[in-house]
Image 1 (cartoon, rainbow, N blue to C red):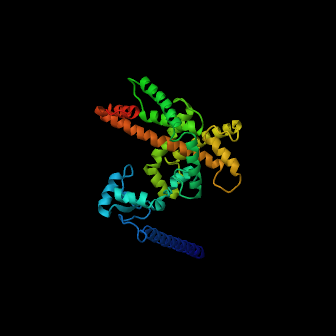
Image 2 (cartoon, rainbow, N blue to C red):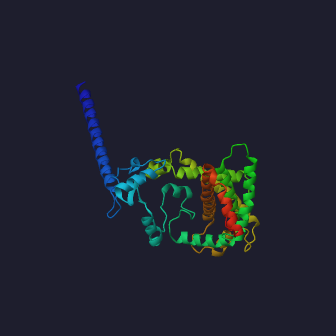
Image 3 (cartoon, helix red, strand yellow):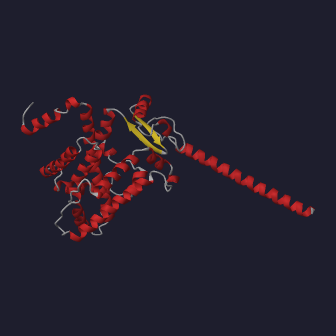
Length: 353
């Protein structure tokens, strides 16, 4: 009996010893990790000043994640026109004032020609496309190709103006049919801008109630909201949550839906295209792809899918939001609603009113 009790006591003593050892190792590892994160969160030498940085969180507690503009203005009064903040562990430099912005964008344009590599956006776009791609060979190749091809299809020419005028007629019909009813001008302007760029990219105009345009416009709108919201910041700051079923996963689902639409269109175009006789942007890209072959360039069919969505988004979101802003101002200031008509008339007929 005594020997059994002694063995049990020895076993318990050994278990407690190993448990204490494990706890000690874990606490030491936690302390080392904390010190590492603390030092990693310090600003590099000659980096613009800014508020104190917290480990992991950075300066997120200093900012209103819904709209940080007022916080940026407040911080600029404390740290100057050029200061830095950390969005989680990611550093960002904020520039305020015309003089500082002009120096960065105009005087030192070559030094600032890259794009911020946002982890969330890169993962959603699979690091393809051109709009938010970093400055480099792929960006230069695709930008050059896009400018040349879009000009061939009317960018900056009379033919593009004709497309816009044609689409305006559909917008007017939408407004007339909505008299006395509620209307979402955001959806209307997104549909109009989307249709104009669709004619260039895919050679097709879609009715406003067409499933494709409705789904793609909705996906673009949702992804813009997510990318500019708090969940994208949290995604960038905490890699451990990337695969969790959180709201940012909606952006990946939306991107997949849009890609499937474009893949279907590209496959249909490949069946009917005539090499050397492009009907639209996608045909031009397929011609370029055949011409280049395996030359090691960044051109590929996978790139074409994201590239088309990139241009579609760029041709839709900025234009529609600009129109929406003008529409909002005209609604809030009814006394100036007639002024744009007079201005357009003066330009069109060469008269001064």
